[in-house]
Length: 415
Image (tube, rainbow, N blue to C red; front, side):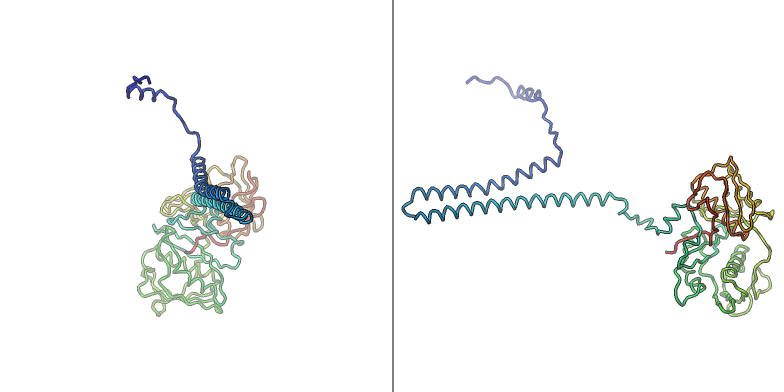
C-alpha cells in the first residue's frame, strides 16, 4: 500500500477547505426526530428477542417432529404467533401513549407561556385593580356623579380642604342603600372611610364633633369636641362653615344647633359664641375651574371659585373660566381658542359655538363640557343644550340631546 505523505497540518488544512455543513431544521423538528428514533429503537430492542424466540421455537418444531404431535406443534406455533402479535400491539400502544403525552406536555407549556404573556392576567400590586366605575369614568373623561349611576346607591358629598388651604373641594362617593339606615346614618358611617390624603387633599374626616340628626324635625345638633381646631385660622372657619352649609342643603335642614363639649355655643375667631348656624344669604355664582392636587397632571378635580367682580350673568362667569386663578392654583376650564355665546331658554342654557371654534372628542373638551354643566347647576338651571359643534358626542355626552346636569362633583372610590 502506498504510504500517505500528508502531515497532520496538511490534513487540518484540507478539512478546513471542506464545505460547511448547516442544519436548516428547527429545534422542534430535531427534537421530534430524536424522539421518534428513540421510540423506534425501543421497539426494535424488544422485537429482536421476540423474533429470536420465534425462530428457536420453529427450529425445535423442525428438528424434533417425532417428539411432538402435529396438534401440539400447531398449538405451540399458534401460541407463539399470538404472543408475538400481542407484544407487538402492546409496544405500539405504549409508543402511541408516549406521543400523546408529549403533545399534551407541549400544549400545556404553550398555554402556560400564553397565559404569562397575556397582560390581562397580570395584576400590578402597586396600582391595584381598578373598579368598573373608575375604568368607565377614565374612558369617558368624566369626574362627576350622574343620575344613571345612582340606581340603588346613595350619593354623599364631603367638602375637603386642599393641602395649601386655598380651596375647598367637594368630593362625592357612592354607597349602597341599606334597610333601616337613613342617608344621614350612611353619611356618619362613611366619614372614617374617606381617603383624603390619597386624593391629594387634607385629612379632615371624621369631624371633630358629634352629629345628632332629627329626621322628623329636620334639625341637626353639632357638638364640637373641647379641643377642636375649627376656631383658629380663617381656613378652618371657612371649612366648618362650608361643611355646615353642605349639610344644610343636602339634608334639607331647618335648624343647626352648635355646642362645645355639651355646652351651648361655639367660638369662631375669638368672636362671641355662636349657638345656631344659618347659611349665608348672599347670592354668589361661582364658575368651575380645574384643580390638580399636588400639581400632578392626572385627572383634575372641579373647584368652584367666585370672582371678586361678582358677575351677574352666566355668560360673564363663562368668560372668567377661560383664565387661570393663580392665587388658588386653579386652571382655566375653557380653552382660550373656543368661543361661544350662552343664552337662556326657560330652564335651559343654550351654548352656541362660533364657526371658528374647533370642537373635538377629547379629554380637554369633555372637561370643558362638565365645567359648563356644574356652573349651570350653580345658577339653578336644569339643562344645557349645545349647538353648532363639530361632533355629535364628546365622551359620555350626546350633543344631539339636551344634557342633564350632574348630581354631585368629583366622584371618588372608597377603599
